[in-house]
Image 1 (cartoon, rainbow, N blue to C red):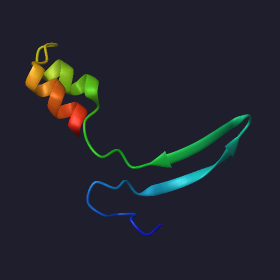
Image 2: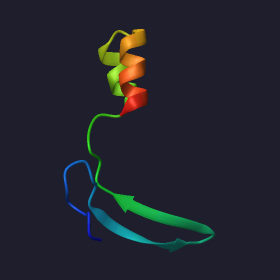
Image 3: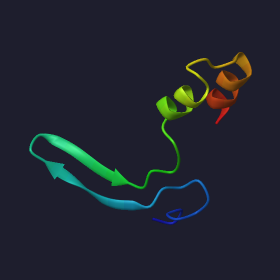
Image 4: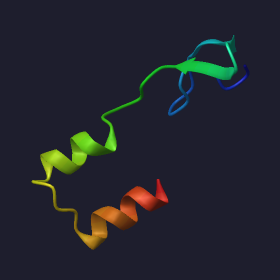
Length: 55
């Protein structure tokens, strides 16, 4: 947990096993990609795609 809470690192809320699934609950760091896609009128430029890929 050394990096927890640092810039760009989500805070771990909980992890464990539920039924047959491994579960990890973390903070949401920003808007989801669909929100960004909708904000851009459902069109992303090549520059935006490359910026997302790099990040």
